Image (cartoon, rainbow, N blue to C red):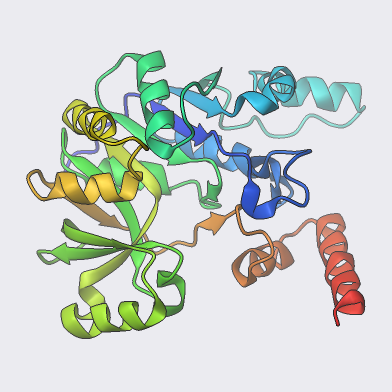
Length: 298
């Protein structure tokens, strides 16, 4: 299949990080370092591999940080920093050619709102939606989604089924065979017992865990708009996708590379990733934080 370049990318960063409320009032969770750099930069680098343009939809509370952020990711920003710091000029960032806009989210907070805000700003056809707190260190997930899915068809990125991780993900029940499946239905964050039953009923190979990358078509956006008007509270994006999949194809592209959830930085997953980082200062800080927690634990 010929790869189809993404028209544009909407990066949903409209949350306040309430799951990590200890420090999220002071710094967006999307700025948490992964491999020595803010997680948001990894998301932008992944976007740059598949599109020429991106818009970051952020929470209005963080607006004072946006001017600085836009300077940091602007063309030539790293070279200017290295000059000011009297450091040798390093590699050119892969985001240099990516046009990035930052807009404050308006409307009730929901993933669907971020998608609407971004689509309204971009005014284009198909868009890819990436969740800013789901970091792909390999920077390949978005381009993989675009290349593997059929042109003009809604699609999602999903990881292999894992019983322990299923309780914090949308579990997709797939139809078809091969690397490219179709969504038959979805169960949002099942209990462990329910997830085990799904595996017994359908087979683990026919289950996938929804990850934070979605290709939205104009038809899917219209469906989301209609679903939002029918309810007092905006529908959860994963459940709206499942409803859409009853009448229209939603392709499921399997990604075997790890995706880090910055919304749960104290989870075993994030701890393991940060422990493997080559940045010694970051690793030392993580070790110190862990020791302090152990000393003060009952």
